[in-house]
Image 1 (cartoon, rainbow, N blue to C red):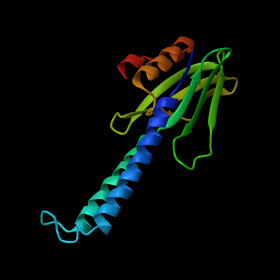
Image 2 (cartoon, rainbow, N blue to C red):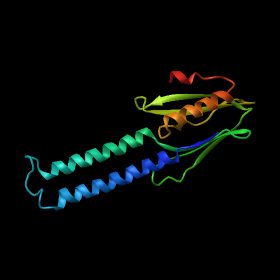
Image 3 (cartoon, one colour):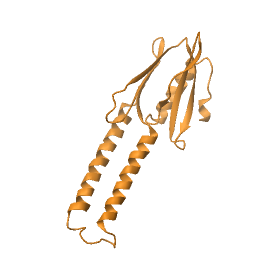
Amino acid sequence: MKLDNRKNTFQIWLRKFLTTIALTLLVITFGFTDYFKSPVFGIDKLWYLLALLVLYVGLIVYNILLKPNFVYFTDNGDKIILRYYPTRIFNRKKNSIEIPKQSFFSWEVEKFFFGRGEVLYLHGKYKSGIAKYPGVSLSAVSRLDREKIKASLNLHAKKKFDYTRN
C-alpha cells in the first residue's frame, strides 16, 4: 500500500499564500486609502490594522503548532518506509524512516494540540534493544489515510496497538 498527502500539503501551502495576499491587500486598503482616514464605526484605522496583524499572527502560530508534514508511506516490499518533511517554506530537511518488516516491533500515536494532531512513533527491535524512531506529525494527513496507515502498521507489528480507541 502506498499513501501520500500531496493534495493536503498543496492545500496548506495555497491557504498560506492566499492568506498572505489577502492580508497584504487589506493592509494596503486600510493603510493607504482615504476611506479610512477618519474613524469608521468609531474605530481608528490603526486598530483595524492591529486586529488584522493579530489575526494573521494567530493563523501562523496555529499552523506552526499543528506541525503539518508531507508524508509518504509504503509497506510494499520487505520494508516499511515513511518519508516526511515539514511544510514550511524554507525547509530543506527531508527525513526517511525505513524499517525491515522482520525488525518492525510496534507503533504508537500521541495526540497533541488539544487532540487536533497526532504524532506517530515507530519502534524497531534490534539486537541492542528496541529503537524508538523520531515522531512524525500526521496532522496534514486525512483521517481515512491515517486509519489506513494504522491498520497497515498493526498488520506488520509484533506488538499490536489498539488504534480504534484513539
